[in-house]
Image: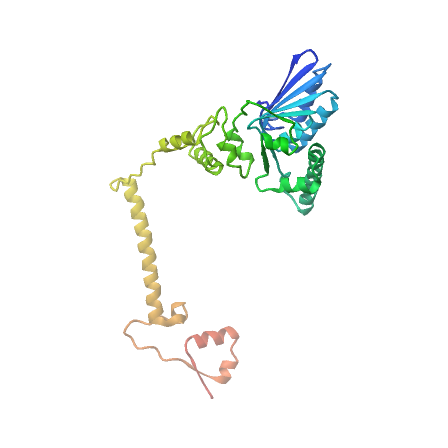
Amino acid sequence: MSKWFNITNSAAGSAVIDIFDEIGYFGISAKDFVNQLRLTTGLTSLTLNIDSPGGSVDDGLTIYDAIKALGVPVTSNVTGTAASMASVIMLAADKITIAENGRVMIHRVSGGVVGNPDDVAAAAAVMKQFEDRIIEIYMARTGKDETTIRDLMKAEIGTWFFGQEAVDAGFADEVTPGVQAKAFQPNWMKNFTMLPVALFDMPTNAKPTAHSPKNMKALLALASLVGLSLNGDETEDQLCAAIAAHKPTPPKMELNVEDPETKAHFQKLVDEATASLKTEVTNLTALIKNGAAGAAGAGAPVTAGAPAPEAPTMSRKAFNALSHAERNAFMATNGKLSND
């Protein structure tokens, strides 16, 4: 089971928490986090090292509240990315530092539900409650008003703050000089609809060569589609080379017309088509010779070249005495009525 956090005692009375993956997934919940945090008794200080794309809102708020409830000095170090719920957990600290090219991202709460209109409305109400709570946390830390925060969260790709920008916006206290942030992990791209190009153009210890997040995302999808096995840290150039080298052999199609089974199959198709054609010819011949009524079976067929039979005659009085079915049968023979 993969684990997205690690809690260690670094010295007497102090502990370090590393959050280096998606929050609340892999079957490990905020409950596991809080239970492990409680084992670090006698704390006098806590350090959070964060490089995370975010994750579960419910788990993230639970972790934020648990850290705040410790009542000890807390320092957050953004060593790479503090996006989405990671940016909320980051704010549980009294002091926040960020690497020179570290990044903080805030955006709106998102989620999904399947159900009737009442289910959808209930889910929307819960998402709004979560979002309102997060906005309160952002406002308290940055000093910005609600409208400003909401506008920042509504940006199409969220709002990203790089290094000093995070300090200027009130999300961090200081930039750690000379410290390069961890590169953005390509396998986190699935969590974002769009990403800023600057995320890939900045100098890092392991800089991706990709110049377009859209290209990178498309390449990852293509690599997955063709069945390539990836490590998750490939650059755009490496992905392109791997995809180009992956040339699956198309299935070989051969048809042996001398094969008895193949011959029998084709002969069956020919016989069926011939029988169908013969039936159509017979029906058309009957239609031409006998007319619509004769072709349907009413009256005797007319022999080709023979004179047409004389139409029967019946008095109107006799005709009126017939049943409905008998009248129809008489008229089908093109019978004539007399006034006798």
